[in-house]
Length: 70
Ligand SMILES: [Cu+2]
Image 1 (cartoon, protein in one colour):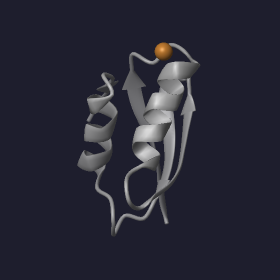
Image 2 (cartoon, protein in one colour):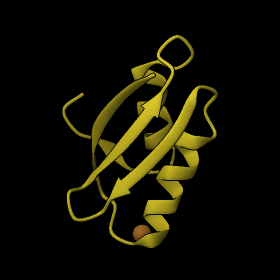
Image 3 (cartoon, protein in one colour):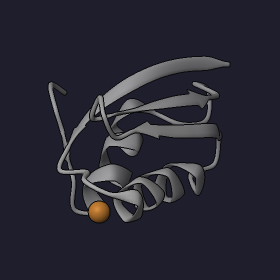
Image 4 (cartoon, helix red, strand yellow):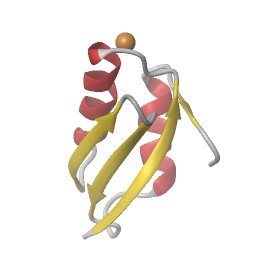
């Protein structure tokens, strides 16, 4: 199981938090997604044989947020 923190721009409220967490959690291989609104990031636990960095970035951007520093 791998873990990483993705910096995300544009998340402001509980709705943003649940949108990003839901999008990531719906990916096959993601076991946990936890947004920290104060730090503008999301911590993800995932199986790196099933899910790629770019598929996680895409899932976040499809919700309307920007992935920083990718
Ligand atoms: Cu919001």
